[in-house]
Image 1 (tube, one colour):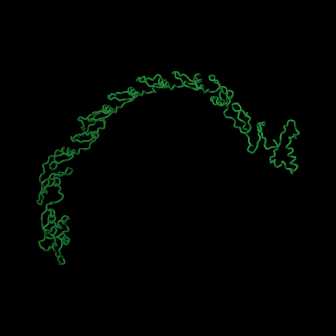
Image 2: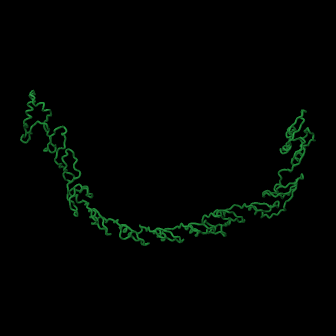
Image 3: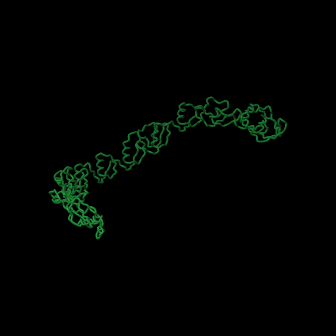
Length: 509
């Protein structure tokens, strides 16, 4: 500690006009200092050197004997002390870094060499490395006793039971030799291969695998390829382990080769996989008496194979249906009534006709044999000739009308003719007197209505006012309007007019 005065001394040197107190001060600074302490002056060190100059003397706050002269403001910092830091590290050794007061960042890795505790490899080891290799030491272990847990890193060679050697750190080798650790596994190739007891094949393995497989053979499988011959006779290359499992019946085998088989149910031939053929051979059911012929009403059992060949479904009536085989079997017990057309004698008219098979059986069971109808007279039709609830007969029959005309009509239409005679005759139009074609049944209608045909009075058409056309049917009116000629007519007013004959009906009403 002390009082320091900083300034420019050159200003004062040689200046005769200085104030007296500055002159006295400079004289004192040029002389050695005196002790002005009244207490124990003998033990107080007093600076005896020159008290002025261009350098500022500094000392280390921790090591007072180390001084340094600062020549500029840049030198006013710590770091000039060369004394060794003597603070104790965790291991008990000194820090040995140069003085770094006031920082506490002491040395992290102690370089002091200490004696190794390994009896097999004595020597020196750096203190920080020794501590790193004492991983098994409890946390509360004293540093003086921590080397008891030192793990020597020197690599040693261990001879395994298989005669191979393996390199391990000294401390691990010692634990293995003391029986505290298990002997390491040997991953080198074993001079003796592993031999499978079931097939005799051998497998190249490591020494560790040989020991493992000998202790538990179930964990290893023989991957050699071998020939397997199933009951069907087809050879197949399989892994040895798989072949063994199949032979021991621990696993099933399905041969995917194809062969031609005869299906037991329908008799058709099919190409199927060998495994499917074995299943087909075990089928139980009823076989068809003829190949591809399925009889109605027979229960053949479950399907042996989905056959798509064409089969004939034979009904009890004898008719057959061509269907896919599996569909024929499905319908054999659930068919609808047969609708095949069959020719029979019609029970009403005696003609031959075609009806559905199931209806023919019903009609045959009645055993009716009527005489064959060939000629009928209108108004004299037998009551037995009826087709209610029976099939129609399209056989042509001679039909004599009351008007005398003769027609050939279908048999089933004669019993109840819907319309009159359609044969046409040429008659005089009751409107214009011209010739027109009139169906026979229209002529009958005109006669019933008492429509009179006027005399031919050409070139004039005289309308008979006594004729009543209002009761005529539409068919009759169309016939009367069918004349395509023109006529002169005397109107009710007495005048003459020429009109189309087809429009005369309006003037007559």
